[in-house]
Image 1 (cartoon, helix red, strand yellow):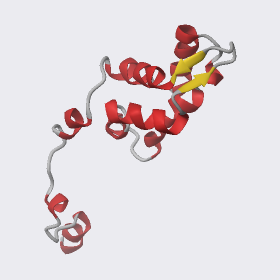
Image 2 (cartoon, one colour):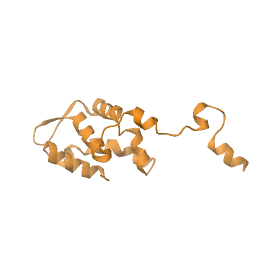
Image 3 (cartoon, one colour):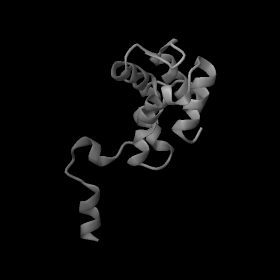
Image 4 (cartoon, one colour):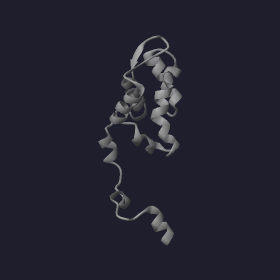
Length: 117
């Protein structure tokens, strides 16, 4: 799914209420698009730890406009599963990030190399 509103519409279909009941949660998962506009933004929140963080921010449940209590964790799992097909762990993401020299505080920085060229 490409847009948080589409996730919210799906949440309303699955759990009742209206899309606006869920939009804040789905916007939160995709806020990282403001910093990197491709699929790598998902590495920041689209995992099991992100789902638990979402729950700590939005609460254990939300009450939708139908008066039904819906577990926030379930909404988060829906978002991640809709995007990825499964819920990875942080480890799954980090194991697939290529290590760079600057990650080890070696004194090398990307901008230093550019300046000497």
